[in-house]
Structures are given as structure tokens and as C-alpha cells.
Length: 416
Image (cartoon, rainbow, N blue to C red; front, side, top):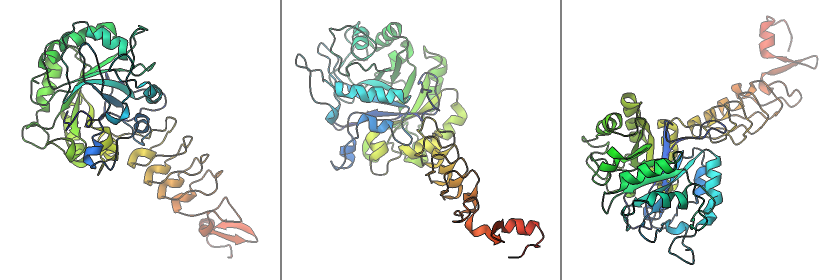
């Protein structure tokens, strides 16, 4: 991943399926994965903005489906992680960060159906896979291990898996690492983020001989990005179908979320959407979604693209778990979780939580919360004396409400 220093950089993943269903990288489609932790937003905005807290991205109108905590950047005798400005306190007995304050946020995101992974490596750091048993260390430190003597930087939170973003050191050992981790913890998701030139210099052997559930290909910083003639998703699709140890592996189109997020390859929301849809028509069997680097730039930067990408390219729904309509379909969420209509369909929310009609269909709200009709489809407010009728379509005959439509139906025999 592109980074000007380890303190700043990456992000992307999918919209939440309905209700309690969680997204799963292993079989989900149209996912949105983002990297979080390196605060590249500070670079993009010259320090004017910082990346938000983890939980805030999980409550976005169209949140990612996967968030990758970045990075576990030192895995030698004294393992360490780096989360830029998000966590800086270490345990007393080591250089490992004590980020136990993030445990509740991680669990909260997971409860919303969002998978949280730890990304190992990054554009800078001191790492190589020298320890053949390091998979056990990772399991005990970040996943489901119960060894009480191990310092767990995220406390009681159990991450959903790990990601390999290996851009330096030796390429040796990673295939063995993924195979062992898959054997120790088969429910843990294992992903990687290779550069787009195929085969990847650092992960080529691991990709052919190790276990991966999803691959976030970095289609930027190289001549194989979608805006160049060398775009090579076809090569990666061929790898997925013919060489991957996991026959069901998913491929993600990795893209920078801002121009400053990479040296080249920034597409913008519209071009990325077009690229994704075109790729999907040819490779829907292996395409898993879009990856963005990173969360801060994707959602909060100068011209954030995550919402547009999620809605237009990935067809995301609203983040309200009990929502039944399509309020989020054009980028607006329904703030009333028990709303069943389509209030957000034209960009307006249904302000009456017990309203069941289509008040928002033309951008108007129904001021009568117990009204069950579709008065607002005509853009009308309720009559002050007769709340069950629209004001501008109502006349009175002998103090009784009669609509203009009814008068027409009676061939004009009633007198106004």
C-alpha cells in the first residue's frame, strides 16, 4: 500500500445484508473493504482532518463490509502494531501497543455484520516470516487463542481474520503461514493485497501454494491499473480459477480513495463504478467487490467516494438492520428503523415512524402519523378540519368532506 510514512496510509469493503445477516468475505459478493488505522486523511488535507474512530465508519449510511486494521508491521521476536494516532500507549513489558480501548468498537462493528481483520505488513516496517510457528502466535494474539500469558492488543475482541499486505522483506514463509493458520483456525478469514503486476513479487509463491479466501489486488501505482491499457484483471481471474489452492477465492478491485492516496491509478467514483460493472459482466464468478485505500479518504476526504461507490457500483442498502425498503438506494438513509415504505426513494426520510405509506415518494412528509394512504404522492398536506383528506383536493357539501375526484365521479351533480 502507498504510504509517505508508517504513521499515515490505507482502506475498503460491502453494505450490510438485511437484519442480523453478516457479510462473509469467503462467499459474499459486492463487498466494500477499507483499510483503517494509518490516517492518510491527514496527508490529503494537510493536517486539517484526521481519520475518524473505528466505530464511526461502522455507522456510516453505507458502511464497509470489511475493515482491515493496519498494520501489524513488525513480526519478529518482539511483535508490534502501528495504528498511527489511534493508539500510542504500549504495554509496560513490551513495545506492543495496548489498544484494549478499541475492543468495544471492534465488537460493535462485528455486531453490525462487519468483518474486522488485521492487516500484516504495509509499505514500511520491519517484517519477514522467519518463524515457522508464527501462525500460532497470531492466533493467540489476535484471533481465538486463549493463552492467558499472551498480550492481546485488542483485549477480549476476537478479530475475524488476517490480511497479508507484504511489500518488503523476504517472500519466503507466507504460504506455510497461511496454511497453518487455516488449519489452526479454519473459521478465520485469510486475505492478501498483492500489487497488480502478475505474479506478485512478494506474494506470488504464497498465492499459488497458500490458502486465501479473498485477494484485494492493488490495481494502482503500476501500469496495470484500470485507467491504463495494461489492466489485467483477466490474469488474476485466471489465477483464481486455475491456480488458487482455494477454488472459491474472491477477487477485489483495489483502488485509491483519493489522488494523494497513491502515486497513480486514482479513478474517481464514476470511473471505478464503470470499471466494476464491466468487470462484473465478465467475471462475476470470481469478483468479490471493491477495496479502497483508505477509510478516512474514502468517507471523509476531499470528494469522498465511498458512498457513491457503495450505492452505484455495489448496490448497497441502508444500514438500518430492520429496514425493509430502499431508502438508501440513492444515498439517503431512513432514520426511522421501523419505517416500511420508500420514504428515502427521492432523498427524503419518513419523519413519522409509524407511517406505512409512500409519503416520501415525492419528497413530502405526511404530517398525520396515523395516516395509511398515499396523500403525499400528490404532494399535498392534510386538511386541518378533515385529517383523512388532502387539503387542496377537498371541498365541503353540507359540512361534509367531498373530494374533487368524487364530484367528477358523480358527473358534477353535487354543488360546491
